[in-house]
Each structure stands twice: as C-alpha cells, then as structure tokens.
Length: 289
Image (cartoon, rainbow, N blue to C red):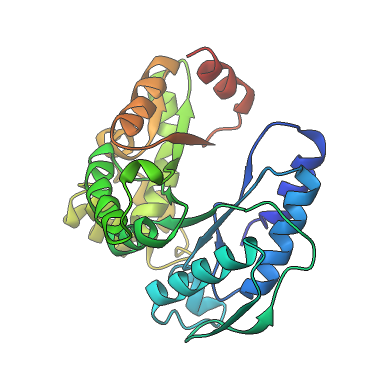
C-alpha cells in the first residue's frame, strides 16, 4: 500500500503542458466503472486532453488481503474496458454483466475520448488487450524474450477484432538502475528483483528465470510481507545475471542498450521506473539518446 495514482496525476497536470498523464494501473473491483469514467474525464478536463486510463485485474496476495475475491479477472477487465470506452464516447450505457451493472449512465460533461489501456502480464490478458483495448501496458521485471512471446499473443487478440498489431499502443514499464559503477547499479536493483521473484513467480518463469531459484526465493521470503530477515537472505541468493535479465541496470550506455532491447521486441514507449533516487540523472541520460 504505497500511493494512489490519480492524486499525483492531477498535481502533475497543473504544472505541465505536454506530458501525457496515465495510470499504470488502477484496478477493477476497487472502483466502480462509472466513477472511473467521471474521475478520468475530470482529469482530462484539468489537463486539457492529456489523460490516459490504465486498468488492471489486481493481483494476489493483495486482492485477498483487502477482501476482494479475484473471480474471473479476464471477464472483469473485458466488461470494464467495454463500458468505459462507451462512456468516453458519450454514450448512454446500460450494461448488466457479472462484474459491471449500470443502468442508463452517461457522462454529463463532454469529454475527449480517453484511451483505455489494459495492464497485462499473463498471455491470456495480453490477448484480451489486443482484442478490446486501445493499448496494452506491459509490465516491468520481464525480459526482452518475454516481449517477443507477448507480441504473438497481442497479435492474436488483435486478429480476433479484425485489426493489426500496429493499431495497439504498447508502452512498457522498465525498472532502471543507473550508476557510473555498473556493479553498484546491479546491487541497487537486486532487492527489488528479489521481491518480484517472490511476489510474481509466474512472471519470472515466463521470463526465463529458473524454477528452482524462484521456489528457493519464495521459501526464504516466507510469504508476503516477508518474514523477519527473509528479504535480506533471499536477496543474497539472486545473482547479477538474473538482475540484468529483468532490469535495465548498469552504466548509462548499458541502460540505454537494454531499454532498446525492449523496444526492438515490441515496446512502443518505454516508461522508466527509477530504482535509485537519481531521477534527474536518469532523465538526462535518456534525453541525450
């Protein structure tokens, strides 16, 4: 439980003029789709047409910890996307599904059409994004090889809807640890990689991380939040190669090269997630590329 996304997006909107402003991502189940439409149409009004909506299906163990049964997540996302797209087209919507129930709902204030992105990691969700969404927000802590496989599923989803892969925007979060000392950059990224090895084991396996390592990390962590001392012990088990597989970590040149590898495998817009606090240095390094 860290930060809400919409409050800082609104703050950023008031002090910028050109940046697109997107959530990556808010969840189905935790917000009613009609309220999501109102919130983002308001953000779009404040930002003068710069809002992007990213939604996702929540994840375990977070869902169960906050009292939500993560039931049929693919259907939940499908219903949310379809309803939100209709609301942003200023339609009056009546929809009675398994997860969404609205009767004669419409936005009263005219809004620009706000693109709806699906935050997806599993290949079934990626395929759904290709079928129904305006874009897919690809996850971080994956390898470029994962991207190659993801594009096959995204293309299949697009085919079902009679459109091409090029019609689907594909931004991607990339965890980035930059330091002029490559080893220090890798060491700074190691704890975050360890956390995700424990929290999202299925993602790690899809990226080529060995199943034995994933299982050992999960056992050492002892659940989430980790048991006392678990994260420290587990972090020591993660080698440099695994950190470099899942992140852009190293010198500026090394980080640029790794981010380019994600672009080469289908990412249309890298969204850098700074692991260290040197945000300005990271911006400057990529601005010069």
